[in-house]
Length: 567
Image: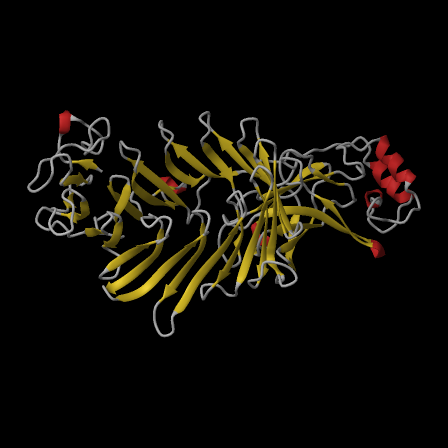
């Protein structure tokens, strides 16, 4: 937003600012106003509709103090409080005592200060009371403090009535360094009473957080640990988080930092950063250190997290060959005669997956069978030998969320009969390995030598491998695709966030700033796949258009496209 006035002939993209070049408020003489205080400012939106900000001051009568701010209004010259009006009231010590305005009951919210014998003029707020009139409290927030330190010890939110209802109460314990070590949470806002206990290392980095039932902090009365309820964290010497785990490795995540302490990958598979071949979350930055791109994460949509080629070895049972998904690892090699016949895919959530969603570079998809726990078996036949087989997932979406599949959408496997050591070449070493396991029981450690997958390792497996001797094949695994792209302007302000590869239903968010770096506009555009001859583009008109009106640094109005007040 800019000013409709023209101090010093200034010129800015949004009009002239209501500040001098040193960002001091300008002198603006006005009826009844003190010269060194602004009585009114006009803020002009891009469609030239004016919003007048009128500042009100006490006049010195009664118990007021001349020139002290008593509130402000937003409206027009004809109706100065058409859009917004707030008022400030003070106690005898000049402390803010009551505020009235939009979103508050008729009498506003009243502040009560902590009364201490050692500090009777304390500025610490003890309670906030939301009142419909001077004597009627509708709701309240009460704060408690430690006796020997100005540190918050409790917060209680109450709705008045019959009966009185405690919506939430938080009771804190702190250590000698002022760090919170626990909180007990009670009230109707919670499904059950529970507590958190926190621990730190000697650098005050959070190392543990444990959630328990009940309100007792110590054994033997400490309640059962909740699920999830145990969180642990580790850091490197400079303070970068290295890892966090939940419930004794029920889930875990490693953070990979570069030499300038930027996280470049987030990995939930193993402690090597990043783990080769896994669908690690990848992050990229520009030369100024701004995050410019990030791959998909939980919440963006269903993700393919692992794959394996499974074959049945006669009466011995099934054995699986893991198939890495992403660059950084060698592709999995299916060394058994006949190539892959069942590829098991593991997702983060249930998806809609049938034969029509599977595209094979060779062979035929026979069908898809759900296995439970978000796993699916793709059944296939006829894959080309001595080649890279690529399985591509097409138009896969979450079964419940309907969100499209994000991240890796391909599985690549080397089909190379007899390559029992997965080197990409059938050679003497493979024949020697099979010979070494001749007549041995088929186990998880040697099943690759059962080339015929019949549950026996014998001369026939050696013959099968020898028939394909000197054959070779390879696959190049893809990088984890970037899902979000972030754009920044020359002043390192975030101006847009959009999917890297848009599809139907996707949105792009665009931000605009004024000369003071305040975000004054937010627009949301939808992707239309029918534009540009079917190649798709963002709609020209936003489906969400918000503009923000400020009182100095505080947002006081949010407007939609037609300048209607939203909040």
